Image (tube, rainbow, N blue to C red):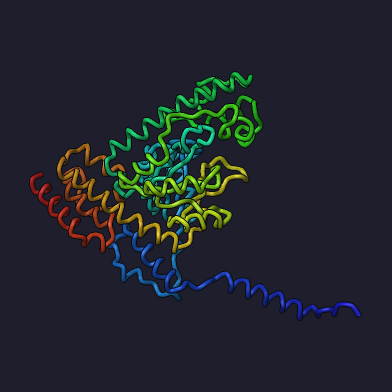
Length: 428
């Protein structure tokens, strides 16, 4: 006799039981370590909520429902090679449940103010970020040189020494213009005619063009069927129409990020020829982490690489808004709460020192220009009872409680800063 026939009723019950098990299995309880991490992260994420709670207020028991905290740490807007404005990007992130978004446009921070303005409407926290184009070289052999992108994450007040950061990024953007011109020249020599005006129009006014803008111009001109084909045939690293700009050395960029109050993270290491060599070198200059998570999950090889060098394991969608099956949606990367907690444990002391440096500089030079610069990054949603125009020092003193946790606020350094700001307010 063959396989026994299972009665329909029994089969149906078995199916229900399987479904019940599946549903139940998807709701995993947090460990005490995960719960502790969640509570610490929550405190920081929701600092700008009215009547900022203490750490105890966020001590949610493991068996209580918890608000999902989605971090998106890699995204682009029309200020570099993205397709959406910063405000539209923030709106889309909100629709996808993102609670913390870092706008990391290529070599520019110009989209951050608009992102902050939109974020205040949607209740999203913004981490000011930038993806810096660099060149990694291994000595005299130029054949081993390759482009490396470094993500920089800054405090709620932006980078310390902003003028230096602006100059540093401006130099790279100038090189991007030259690079795009050289790509167009190479394409013309390959009998694929393009004009500078086409690429410039696609990039937009004042935006430094990148490879994606050149690729879009190629699609519009009918030279290729799609963006993927433009890159795979002509614009890939070392390709027939590839060109470099005036990118700084990777180690110099990492060091610069550290000196200006940022957290330095290696972007998409899976795209590199020799990620181990890159990580080994950059770790010596202060690299804090590497991307090891994508929308398709954790990449074991890069997670192990991070562990080998004691680096943070982060990740983001690298969302551009171009559409299509090949692109990950904004907010699609599931960063474990423990990974986020480790990130903030490293980042918050760095950002705290940067905020201190920025405010000390304002105390020394309490000009309207310095105040507006701080507010372009750090203006919170609500500072009740105080007008920034009438008394900027009082305004910033109140804002401190929205930039820093209660524990950070109790630091003697910030207590002294509050007194100095109060003294300026009296003089004003």
